[in-house]
Length: 313
Image (cartoon, rainbow, N blue to C red):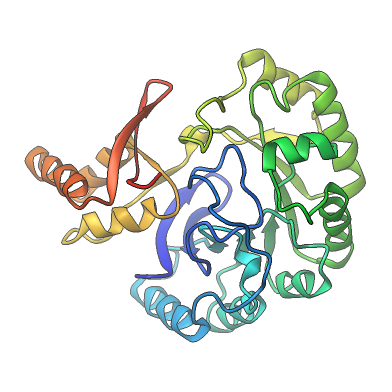
């Protein structure tokens, strides 16, 4: 599969089938916490980065392989910023025409100030944009956007989309130690969130290996402070409540590499998934050896936890 991966199990979206309409690191931001590494060059042009017809054909084929109940959400989530694909609206509407499974879009929200982007995402059932800061300075430090994309653009886009969108608007906040976990930063963020009025706010922690090695999870005081100041607005999404499953016992390496193209994976998660395929310990060891020998994946350690990442991470 070139554009479809999963289903992946998550707390928020249940069994989520991933749809990736964007080549790796085709993005408007260069976030310090990104799990896919640095953005080599910013992209602002909206165009058909991958063939729409091929993606829809692959999606239909995947849906045909699954029985009802296997998939809870179809989630457009790029290896970069999915709204850069000029036909994402068509993709969403064609997806909804072929299935009753709800559609979500995970986006950084940087292009929502554009009416055509808001219209394209209006076909979705849920949209999950990002907001990590309550002011321009912190926005630039954390998300490192293209110079033409201002904090005002981001907030105006989110407000306009909230007014126009009939689906669920769930905003994601990445909490980073020493950056946006102070009382001042959190109060500014809370004030902005109240002006947007999303349906929910999800606090996320940088549990996977980030672009910048100094990025770390807030200590318990920082997390409790965020929950207190954002009380009634936000909920903490525990990363330990997410896991993934493998579905191809004959070729688990390629399936794992497909997921690694989108995000790093914990070694323990991979072990659990391989055991569910009834793989012996020797078989599992061979999978890990094949991953390394492929030259496309390697193992690293982050805060005492072993992860597998793309070799160019």
